[in-house]
Length: 258
Image (cartoon, rainbow, N blue to C red):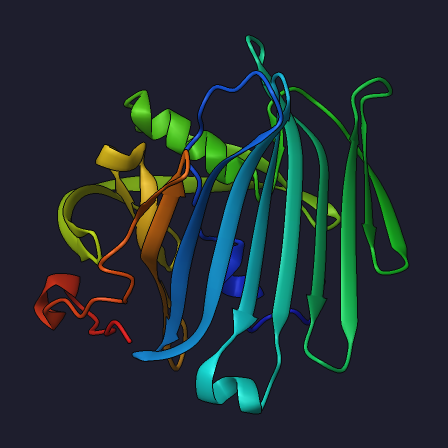
């Protein structure tokens, strides 16, 4: 998906927004909402859901769209879906699907993990690539679930082999330490991690749920902030609205809640 740059750059680097919970039957486990900002102005929203579709089998979906004034000029939408098996042997991705549209053109990407033949079939538009499939290989959505599991286990060496388009890449995150962050649900202590120009704050109290993300680009700062979380039918939000915390808690940049 070579041209899906506007929202894809935020979503592919943002960690999973749904806590991992044990489940023995198909059910919605959790749902989370984020606001997406660029240079302090809200440009979109993201919704993520985690569903247990069978014992030891999970589906994570992500929906991102432009909102507000910018939506009058470009209707960007990105749908991602990852399905995997999680058992005593760890994580085994089964399929990743992404569909991006800007209101004029549509791009589709599908990655299938064939464990019987030990191969990955990656289809991007009309181009097909076959890659070797080895243990530990992840897709670029569900690895975000694994990194939260590793943070909970206290790991500091965060390295992941990801099928990214037609290549297998290594994503390496650095643990920067702890920091308090203001959210619509109150102040939370987080673990701050970084990959290249992207920094993510993960709240330990919510199973290392990402509550804030910042990405430095050449001419702007793209940021995402948690708005609400629903888990087991219980919603956690700030009175149904997006709160406005003091700017100084965000450190080097000054994005605002809407």
